[in-house]
Amino acid sequence: MFARNAARAFSAHSRMFSSSAARQTKVCVLGAGGGIGQPLSLLLKTDPLVSSLSLYDIRGAPGVAADVSHVDTASEVNGYPADNLDEALEGVKVVVIPAGVPRKPGMTRDDLFNTNASIVRDLASAIGRVAPDAHVLVISNPVNSTVPIVASVLEKAGVFDPRRLFGVTTLDVVRAAKFVSGLVGATPAETPITVVGGHSGVTIVPLLSQNNLGQSLTGETYEKVVHRIQYGGDEVVKAKDGAGSATLSMAYAGAKFANALLRGLNGEKGVITPTFVKSDLFASQGIDFFSSSVELGVNGVEKIHPIGNISPEEQKLIDACLPELKKNIEKGKSFVAQSS
Ligand SMILES: NC(=O)c1ccc[n+]([C@@H]2O[C@H](COP(=O)([O-])OP(=O)(O)OC[C@H]3O[C@@H](n4cnc5c(N)ncnc54)[C@H](O)[C@@H]3O)[C@@H](O)[C@H]2O)c1
Image 1: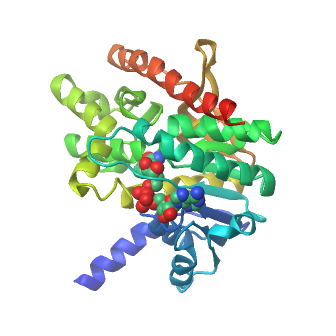
Image 2: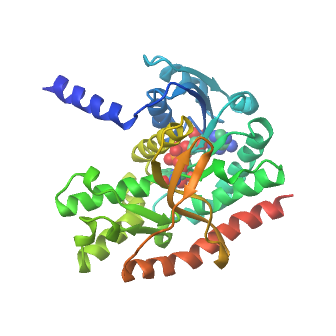
Image 3: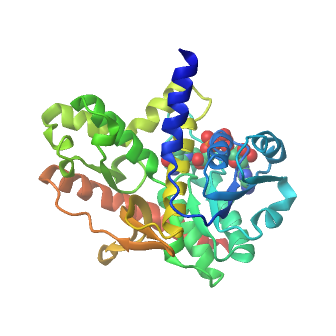
């Protein structure tokens, strides 16, 4: 029984990573020793599109690398301790950043700004110097501010390419599919929900009206599920009672997004997923980063899709999102402007 369940779970996991081409890629995780970094490194080790994994952290990366390297997939794994950031970044095509501190109960993602802003700024500066052509996937919170921080640092270094910078909002998409599926009695595969905006509280805007099952939810049920998608992270922070925020579901979401990007980079067509990128959609209102469905291709961002038709309730959610998102983006930009 156990063996059958385990086999089923493994085959479902393998389906998460579909590989359509042979080209493989060196991927680096910055913050690989952490709650997200460890399971994320493990999942990336099982992705056939990753040829080499470079694991860096100020604490514990060589140990994680030694452990993960025994997994019997083809990719090679190297771990780098605190002083070896530049070596870790050499030749990498994709960098995933889950470095930084997570929330404790009662904290918002913005409360993490003071610590994580400088961590992300310094890592971005090393990326600009050593791996200027890399695609950068930012997990560290507050994503609404850390992504503009990376952009500003790379811009200052003269190597910013907006097609290669992504805020990972996939956990919001994963939660939306899961929560809505439970309410309508379907599988999450039948309830893919586009989530736009940003990645914190009211800036998270799920577009249930664009899914034929999702649009059946109305009234109090609708309000509650929207709130749950926006604040689902708080459920985990509360349940972990001071021991951190989402790590396992986040590692799953991070690996899922990385696989989508790798498939796009490998030439697969039609890879479309929401992600927080430099975007023209609301630039006229001074909001130049926004998450919407993005087509991923050989250069990274291939096409940014508009948000499409939305309901009056969703328009209200967008109206609430924009001012908060604008503040968060400006905070990130001015942090870098004041940094030196
Ligand atoms: N994008 C999302 O949806 C999402 C979801 C959950 C958590 N997060 C964020 O991800 C981040 C990491 O969360 P976690 O639970 O893994 O935290 P954690 O404390 O368990 O791990 C963070 C790791 O970063 C390392 N680190 C700190 N400074 C570093 C530096 N300068 N260089 C390299 N590594 C460094 C730490 O040593 C630690 O191992 C937090 O900011 C958290 O808020 C994002």
